[in-house]
Length: 415
Image (cartoon, rainbow, N blue to C red):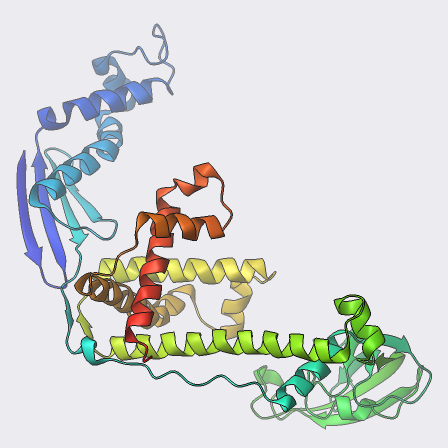
């Protein structure tokens, strides 16, 4: 077997390998055995077909290609260990020829990272305050969340929830596609419809029909409606008026427990607000720290590593959309872009993520920031995991990284 290993720019290495048939004889035999279990050859039981007989029936190329699945990873693993290469992504492999077997593999290596002056970075925390007005606003928001909608025969007002039938027509009276809906719910004033639409719903009664004409904005997201005059026919089916609870001692005692009063409720709101704003402040500090570190980190990644990160981000996007009942294909249609164009746009974000990931790890190594076993166990215990999960390598690594990051933040936040 011949191996040629050389370092490339951008933290890459290239391995060129030439193997004789004897070098991967065991891989060929294993491939032949696996294939023989799937093919039917008269006179032989599955898995018991002699090598030469199998070649006559399926061809040597099929066996060779199957053998590559184990031969190439084995050769690469041995070469990586021998040269002590720190590979950080799946290798990019190209088979040059089958006879003799030649292949080329490009490896993404752990990049060289330069960070100058990170020791001087300090983040100044901001004081978190909760004013009486903040509590008043939070109480009002709470009331909105506890709203009860009651049907009314009165004329509609801003803030009412209405159910309407509507349809749009062009100046010639023809119905316009995408402008019709039945029993459509909306809250007047939330500006969910085209500008001016909701204003025309004020002062109507249940069962009333109204016609009005609107000109769509010049920057409307659907280009065929930009600057277009549309005549709407609207029928109000139902009007619901909001009824907000009074935050008095009686309400509070039901919500927080017997004996609790409005002052207790406001105190609870104040504590919740304070906790939320402290979390926001911590996030702000972390983001500021990250941005300052990013400006100091110099690193040149392999395109293989960036491509892999792009695929991961794209997978995240698709998963999030699916979780919210959205289709990625609809997103592409709305954005008027192809998946490949989205990939190109994601490269900058991928490079930023990688720069921060490797840079932070380098800083933690320089600062000798570590996570002790007892700290990792305590972190995992907080998550309430069972015994088997606690021993999972991935979970323990994630917990360790979380602990190290927390220690890193503390080191660069002004006290």
